[in-house]
Length: 270
Image (cartoon, rainbow, N blue to C red):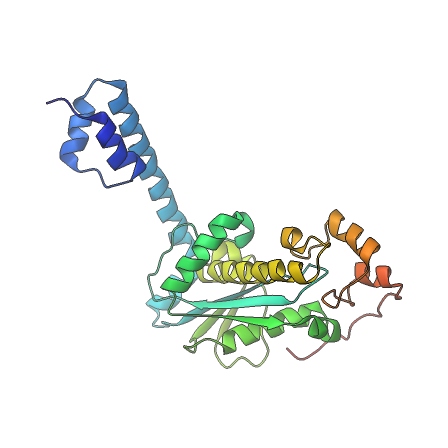
């Protein structure tokens, strides 16, 4: 019996259904180019799935070590919005059940907006707990952006419905945290929970900046999210600063005719 290649293409290529052995053997015996094309797509998909599995195992090495040692609630925390000239800083914290894998999760900066949005939905649905925390513009200007980022992280952790047993943080350390913590350089590239937190923080902050674009038109906030790109600097020079612009940032101070700030104190409370 001749295989219906159009139907097989729909099932196993477009819909991505698992290919049973009998059908695979029949395709291998079929001399038509269409059969070989279907097999090539399936083999490429299997290769990509194996590669993604290996990537996820590597991305989970910190979490897996903790889970195997009996530390079950591992929280990853990261922030978004340290560099923009406008808007608050957003941080997120995420806890997954041991063994959780979500294909595609990576450092939010490596992902396009549509992929980030889809993954944010999946992360929230899969996580044992997740939370976001903010540091507002007046806090950024009061304590400086570094400490404001830590403040947002602490608020994200405090907002978790389940208290973590251990915290993984992207290259930072929080003061007076009553659970063990581990700072990981480039943690959003090396830890699944930190990467997931980076996605939640980024998508949450981007959504807010799109809302603020309607409140403060003319600056292009929905496009650049407050970052110091050329169009934003041009709008600042033409329109001036808004209440959501960070007065402690040099570019904003220049527009307002304010002098440079003196060096920040070496220590501050997080």
